Length: 247
Image (cartoon, rainbow, N blue to C red; front, side):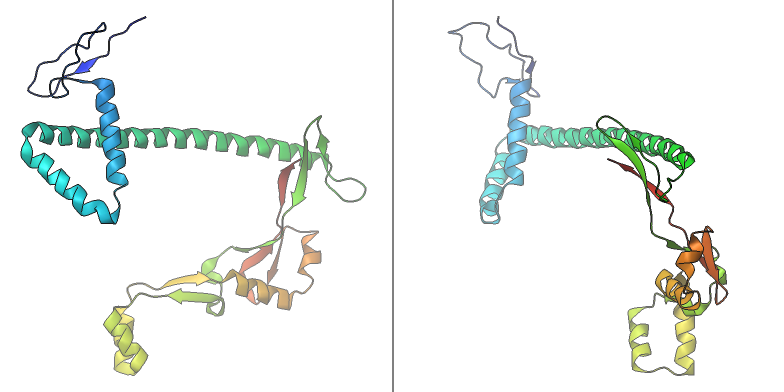
């Protein structure tokens, strides 16, 4: 079975149909370029540009310069090449967006179904040894694993400054002055130079403080969802909950 390739004419030149039988001479590349050849040539050019070694770049640039200066046709080829690259980049971006949506869909589905399974396992409760019951299948199983407790900031504004760190942004010259010397006048400049203090609560410091004042917090968590400390308002140590485990 014989087929005819679609021909793509070079701008300013007539299209020439690909030969049907043997013995018919092919048209010179300057007269006609098939769609397949165009994509192949442009792809090869893209690969050659991407793989030019630093030591060969000067030679490549000289060949490229001569190609652009010699003929309008070659300039059109370069324009076609750039358009090809832009089209491929756009196609790749569209494909990335499509795959991201597909990924997000399946990720949401997994999260939702796992939530259903975890809810069922929680309703089953624990066995006589205090362990979560499992659901066994022929080739897989479902169970729950207890997660470690975590520090939760319930009200950041209520947490004392002793448990916070502050990040400020200063102009470099002003910072150098601060390092060299701090007096009242310079202190005012520093306060005026700070755009907006951004404080962050240190969960490690909060957790250490709660552990120090409530040493039996782990035992308390068995009967309650969280443990707080009067010395650290606005923060608690919360039970870690559980995580679905597939066997």
